[in-house]
Length: 369
Ligand SMILES: *Cc1c(COP(=O)(O)O)cnc(C)c1O
Image 1: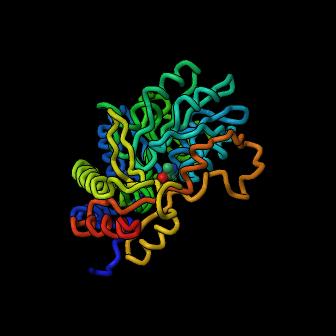
Image 2 (image 1 turned 90 degrees about the vertical axis):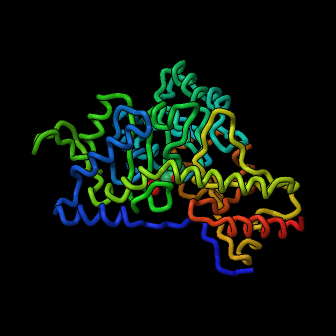
Image 3 (image 1 turned 135 degrees about the vertical axis):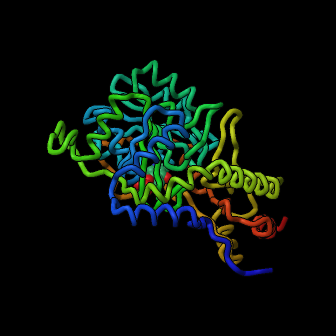
């Protein structure tokens, strides 16, 4: 058996990206320009959203969305505690208070738990399409509608994911990341999608020092711009996105088939009507399994198989957030249980069938099955 390691992510920048970047370099316009505008048009179309605004990264996409929506102190945002910390940091930066709803067995926010937290201070729901699986958007949109709250989707991991025939980023205000490890990436980058033309206008102003025409400032803004160099790397990947997701989905299906029947091991669930884009393929090693999650991780290390623990703790479970005045720590028992059970396996589009088989065989051997 080959001992070469199988990485959890693999970034391959192809000749199309190289050519596109070279064109930008030779154009002499490296900062935000026509290529960013083209990316915004194509991304909006991918999401079925009227507007897309490119920004410097996914965290900024969230910060800019909350700022454009004018969230602030006294407002409450309901989100999941089981996400990357950027979700939390963005809300804290807005000045609003964070409330945590629990998750369901598919790892996304539980609408029933959200509904129980809604009150007159609720200004926004912030679901996360974790691992590339859309949250239950129809239920969440209904709750938000009744509460008079806006919906901000953390779609950093979910480019092209759908509920029915609607893409994520078309329900509420969509916040996407183009960070190096995401399904679509340019090192650092982000996008905000919205159906609201006024909001898109405010986002464009905020991103560029609040400036409408040269030296005409309409509000205090920032420099949150993306560059044409980065946009050039993204465009060819967008055009290949269907193919990328198909490969990832086929890899996920092969893993699920291979890992079937292992006692105490739960393969990822995809609720009916939702299209997963498999940013991560995440299993749960429950207490009923013959091996702990951490022991399985050790065995994968020995076998040279990359894995990830996304995320090893709930977002707020760090000293720097304890007692934070903007964090309301509502009990989330299911989220608290899954953090010690999750383990993500390689599912990226560059895996070979042989590598997928090696992943399955190594795990089955670890469980003696
Ligand atoms: C990556 C990520 C972000 C932040 O995006 P950056 O581009 O790294 O700033 C936010 N939320 C989630 C769920 C993410 O995975």
